[in-house]
Length: 604
Image: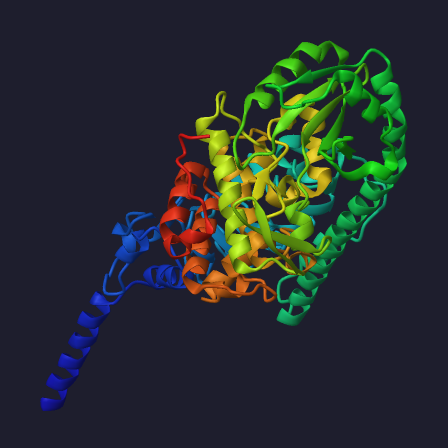
């Protein structure tokens, strides 16, 4: 009798314990939560002691308490997507858009056969599109745009007969778009922003028949793990090789065009200024006669070229009195736009600020606009960071040069000073000048340095001097792809927040000494923002600093990392204004205040 009582009590205890234990769906969600490194705090409400997760934030259940929806957009989720999420057998909707998720999309999601909507856009997810999605027969919506996905579009997706919304735009996909099945019904908008895709959907002819990597990744049921991993590795390798070849081709083509057309530009200068050219000066900034300036312009040739960017060739213009200026030649695209050019240049010429490159005037020639700027002897930040120019820093007491220091690398104080100067210049454009200006092309080659390594923002407003289509193409070909905000790449619409994103990338470049699309990132399917996210999840974010940088201070390093993380948020609404960035940098870098001349944002 005693034994029966004991067994009854034991069974009763087990039943009670089971009734208070969390459900299998709850366990899967806790695994998802455990993989997330950082969020806005909503996931803290998910607790292991809860028997039923149906009341958790972002979770919806059916009448039987099975999880049918996981909806967590814009929750500042940072981390990978746990494969354990595939254990939500009744899941219908997965919405994790506008976060900072990275890693790969779990192919195990193919086990959630009731899924009808997957929204993962605006994250940092890499790797290949899982071919396993091809078995999700109920799938109606699949949006994985604005990520870092590579490889081919799996042909298995063509079998999704119920698919009505499909978007893979703004990724790094390559190869032909499958033309069989439902994928043939989607328009160009579903695929734009993937530079290596081809197919009838985007009116790009596939010139070479590529290897069918999507077929290799779509393994039959029962395939072994190593074979599947090998297929995915091959897809990733193909994507990497394709990206590297694309970058190499762009570099080669850029060099070819520079060599081919730079000389033509220089030969054309004398013709430009000899056929009725006139000089326009702003506020007496050019103390020379028009005749003297035109005479000097006629003497310029290819030996005077000091650069070539997305907006034109740049020459060094030296006057007889020893003053030196930079001359930027912009080819006119439409003669009928003369009044527009003149109006825009008049606005740019009226903008004066310590951290902006000063536009002194311009030469209005029949074939081009020759813009005359201050010459900055320190060259560009791109040259200083990436070893194209030896650095010389001049120290003054009053107006007297007391010392000159040469070095091969920017030290920590110099980098902080440059970041602050660039932030001040951009904040002035956004908040204080009239009219306000969106730069559209913030990058290290557009930050120039004077003899003291003080930063000056250049090329602001020039995007409006060429037609939008040409400007957009030139911006990407010029190598600024890694600076562009995800939403700008998708929509083509620039805002102050797209400038803030580019500034955040610039800060990461200055801190790390690596270009945003460094080859080491491409090999891993990342860019500099994805690399930062990886370091954050490993709690190794300080490793982003350039090992060649001397004098690094932990306090200012951590502060800069915090600012950069906010600026490169995938959600534009979470990015601070540049005015706020300047305020934060001024506050957190108080120990270094002597290094900077903090300014009142309402002053010039």
